[in-house]
Image (cartoon, rainbow, N blue to C red; front, side):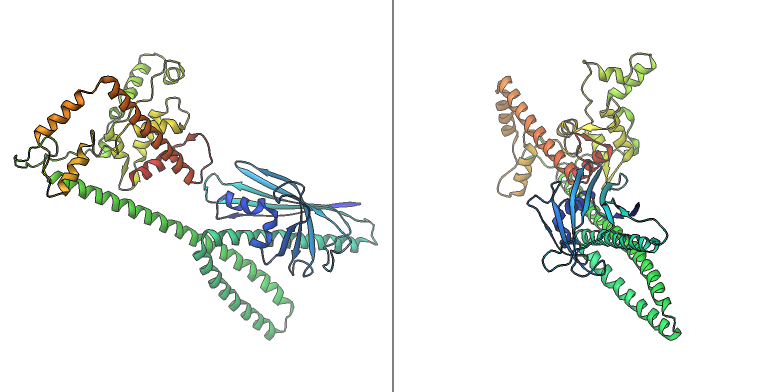
Length: 477
């Protein structure tokens, strides 16, 4: 009479899901990330380690089984998805030992499958949920005289499966964390191992004095569970502190960059007027720069499209969705540089302005923008309105100021350059502008795709609001 059973273990890991899947997908890498559980792992048949049907032979360590025992598994299913991936192994029984090595043998087991499942967490892309489920079926007699033998067989396979999946899960978690955060993992291992050894010695001495042998195993089991739980909590705290330190360092770099840029602007402003200045004219004080606060930016500064939409909606005319879906819909409005200059202040994104700009650029209210739309937007504006350089004039003036031997350009030279620009044919001027616009759009699109790929977001053809804010932050650097 067949008797079914199941062993399940699951926990979160402090790394991205694709790091975990890269190790699980190759079934011959078990000895690399679980050396305390698997001494050696190899593919028995001539197949690639990630293909379905390949057989893995693993040489085990004690105390999971007999030291040096061999377990054979076949990969029956491998599925990698966008949000969830899974692997399924089937146990292969064998009565004949492999050369001089003993083979793990459960004579009453009819079938045994183990499934690994890696799921992404929407709330945190740097974490994942890994679950292991083992199901088995045992051929038991079922009558009363053989009840003890059946119970012993069920207890043996259940104990082995629990130790097998829990030790593999913990070994995988420790390995990926040690690779991602080597300094944190080294500090954690040394500190908690020493603490556990001290507690173990204290429990053993207490049990020896009281002459209660059974209390040793019970106390050590409770202590081990407590130690594992405290170690995980401490590791999560250390990883969180590591993330915060990285964010503080990045914010410090942004602030230093903004401070150096502001000081350079103040020096350039105090040097006098830069455009159309003769060498013999004395320098004059520049007019004070009027800085608009982010809270004072009115909705009308985002363009006339929002105001027109409100007027049309009040008059009962077609809504924004009807206009956006029509074949004659106008292109997305261009944001003014003064608005973009206030979206990022002191290394932080002004969420209200960013959301207002994002909604205006998304007339269909789909909640996302295409990469092309973001590239066109960023290529049509200057760098947050800090300056506007026409034909490289500001760069040329800055180079002349650094050199003490060359004088500033005179009015005659500027008139000669203006006459040369006016002599160009309109067609050639249009060709040069189109080529410059195409190069700028291509470079900005490459910039958008590169920085979106750096974060652990799922690869889609759209840019969400969070990715839009990240691009604004990166562009401000």
